[in-house]
Length: 203
Image 1 (tube, one colour):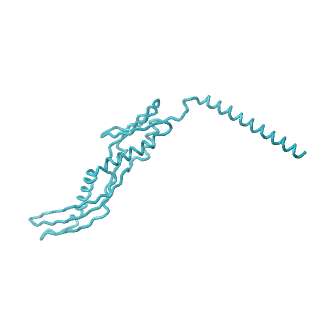
Image 2: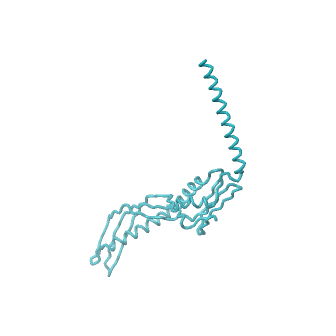
Image 3: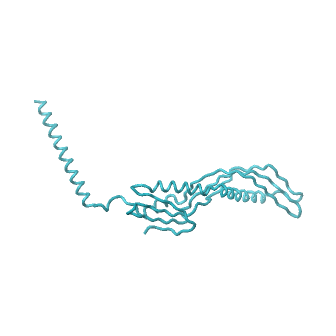
């Protein structure tokens, strides 16, 4: 009977699948016995350092700053002045090339990262507008004055960044990012910032 043969084929197929499933379960159990509990996922210092090296210069804060620059230069009683409004982009973050220290407590599943304090990584002037420029009678503006104004603008923007606590924001951003990155596989990561430290390679 065609129907009977179909039923017998289905039963045989089911038995074959069941046998394969039992065999796979036995192999998995045997493999687990060979690997043992020590082959479970764990985090080492070397692994943490390697992942951090991938983001060695971590820009964590980008802020636009505007300030007013007053430039003045006097030569033999002749004074030239310039009032400039400067706009710049401040990149602040944690430069991991300056050193890191990593401690992994495998029993407590805690990763402690000691990082250098945040610093200004770059100042990019995006716009400069002169609103008042007066040259001296025998002390006119020269290209050297333009260069001096740019240097003055960069320094002023850097001071403004400190006053705005941009570095504090950069450290908080780095802390949030790195703790989220390494708080996996049952581990909890803690980030702290120190003034000076030596690189810990995790050997």
